[in-house]
Length: 98
Image 1 (cartoon, one colour):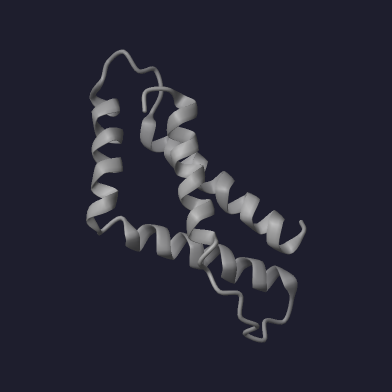
Image 2 (image 1 turned 135 degrees about the vertical axis):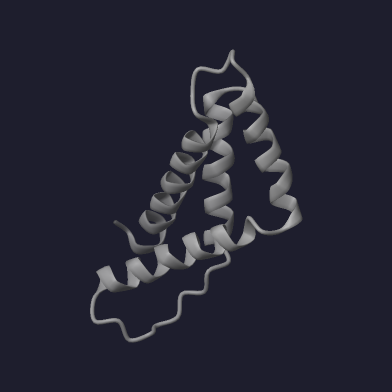
């Protein structure tokens, strides 16, 4: 993982993968926007909680190593987060047809 695209894709794929396991249960939200908000929140909550476990340590190490590399002209953590946000948006679009 050395390029901006590889870092972005790692975040994007992570969000898409998590979204596949979020159960869509009708919780009686008053609007589709509330359903979307609940879905997005679930993905972000799971993603943040998952960072506390060993598999993510490998990704964090790669991102930190890139961050310490003076030849890299981008912030790997920022690009990774942008990838996650794009993955969440894609999941919302796929499921809710937005």
